[in-house]
Amino acid sequence: TKLPFREAERRIFTCWRPFHDALSRLISDIKDRFGYCLVIDCHSMPSSGSSRRSAIRPVDFVLGDLHGSACASRVTRAAEAVLGGKGYLVRRNEPYAGGYITRHYGHPADDVHVLQIEIARALYMDEVRIEPLPSFSAIQRQITDLIAAITLRNVSSRFSMERTKEAPLTI
Image (tube, rainbow, N blue to C red; front, side):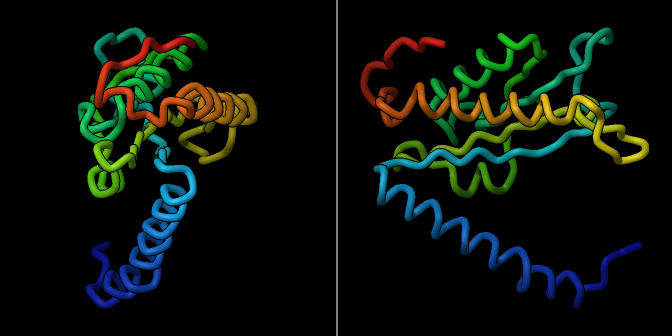
């Protein structure tokens, strides 16, 4: 059923705007404290709807950085290397290059980087019953490890190496 206009407007004023006001403040606070900010915007994608180059194996993760315009490429490459190293099939910007948060907040020239990470639901949930699979905890740990890896490896460079000469990435 179609969402009535009043309900949509109520949700915008009570959920969407407060969320984005808080996110803007958080990004500003983090940037003031550390000199840069990395936003990891996680989403889940339906397994059946994910774009596939191979009919044999579906994509596990899609990393969206708006084709390099929302996040330093070394961060995206680090995420791709970590996930690929764990045996996952990873794709960049296809079919999800980034949504509103990626477009609106990702400004690498201003030291604000946004990486959208789409995770195939089949990795961690029964998509029919909408229930976690036994693998849920393992995926949760691997995502935590991923975030630690991409932030710790890039923290010393403040992601700004791309403005000059990019340093080699070590995983």
